[in-house]
Image (tube, rainbow, N blue to C red):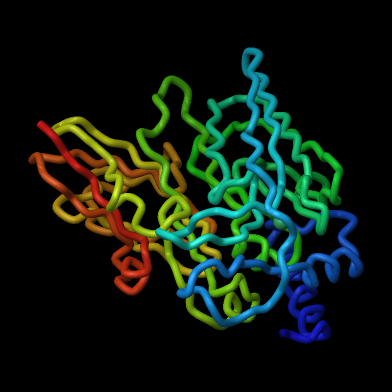
Length: 329
Ligand SMILES: [Cu+2]
């Protein structure tokens, strides 16, 4: 068990970095709520032999998922999301007591059309600590918008989705590493005017042993996953047709590792970094996506067969960031 003094130092250092980086850290963050967050259970429900060891924190109760609600009136979009603690399956037979948006890891994909005026209400159902939401697609003053939502409270984010892209959203409550490392992230896709939404959205991320903060700081993850569960697309492959372009929106939520996205047997024929419509890189074998970044990949398959998609960082692929795409005529 880490002593409180160290945790306070870590969390305050991270909070300072967050403010410097302009990537979260809300107004009204005080030492007291920082400490409150860092002393909360960083929790993994130890329900599997593979997960023993590490932290011994007790977890808050499992809360049933509350699906995201979205309503649209013209270009005005209202979204209701929750922060909550929920048990999720991160590998076959392995349950993790996650800190979540809406009870899933990653949180739901937020799909917007360019120009949408968004009102996002974040309801904090977690009775034990504050949470927040930092949306990379929102060009706003973070200290006024990505603010702390205390237990039982709701706060609202307003922004206009002017820039198309494939973005990350995440909890920005200090220590951010702990909130992201425990599952609070997702993809937000802003679709350019007149364009179709991506075919698939994939979020890469890591899980650390017992949700332990020191493991997140200094250790190596137990699992590296696509869309929250190790190897799920080996068991349930994506599908595609020969000659028909597939658009994959890819986000690397980290919190720590870079992704080296690669599909065996083809090239990424058009790579749009961050999903930007202004930048195109053609015919790349592998593309690096940093933590906190995204990309839109266009891929077309020449022959029917089974193709593997991986992070070409092989240790990470071996920990679960690997899947299949079955291509039919
Ligand atoms: Cu949080």
